Length: 412
Image (cartoon, rainbow, N blue to C red; front, side, top):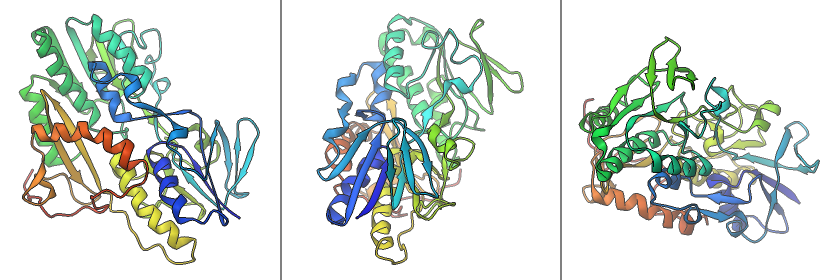
């Protein structure tokens, strides 16, 4: 009997076990997935909780409902991986042997990594929406917020879903406008990037959207600390941004067991081959999704397209054949822009987001780098797709590799 062990039952881990269980003979392969949580959240839904669009019950399901028959699920914390002995020890002392290990434990906000962030102001005047608890606390804070300085800040890249802070700023603008208090709210977007986004064409468009909405943009701001007594963000070059309510994206880091096991970089993300996800250190270990140190977005679409490539490669690998599939960094993200509209970006390692139509050239129905109502509807409909198509491992009519069909070349 051979053993496939998957650490993490998030998007990537759940897709992997659902895709591979039907392909691996029960009498030859044992598959186990381990996660410290008993529930699986639809993480894109966190963005909408502060604005009352979703309740927690609408975006959370038990993991046991999502893991297929024939896959063992262990609800436990992970202590350490012994890559030489090919075992994983859980915090309760259980040891699990593996022939192949997949690390899919994601990346997580770490407010403790920024001085002053997790002090007395945490979840009072300083908030985040990258956890369900944080999004709920922010929803409560919005109930009492009737004006003042609202700052949306990114501490450091990379972060999970890089467009989410921009989406939050756009939704906040629309939210306060609908409440009739937008003139009483001073909105500022603070980023360590030199512009609104990482890619020139998209950055130009998104920066223009901030300007149109009277959202101030503070760039090249590397947060050194938060002064909770004065409600001030302080950068390493001693610039200061005052706030009444701060919505921050803390430093994102991978799981602590990755560091204890000597498998991670300085942020506990696992260095892997960017095309095949195999560990740079060990040929029996892979890292998928947000847990991997890849030069592309940490986003659900990356997990989706990565798993499509990984599943095909894994079946070749265990048969002793070369892995022929190569992930190209493909990612696409809907960007909610408020008032029932949204944008869509589609890119990979080599090609930045460009305007055009997706997925059918000239037809769409989605427009790239353009605000439309159908883009918004696409984003909202994706929750159904996530639970019913993506996680169960069904094939979606979207290519894992990016195509230039339907895209327009432009100068930034």
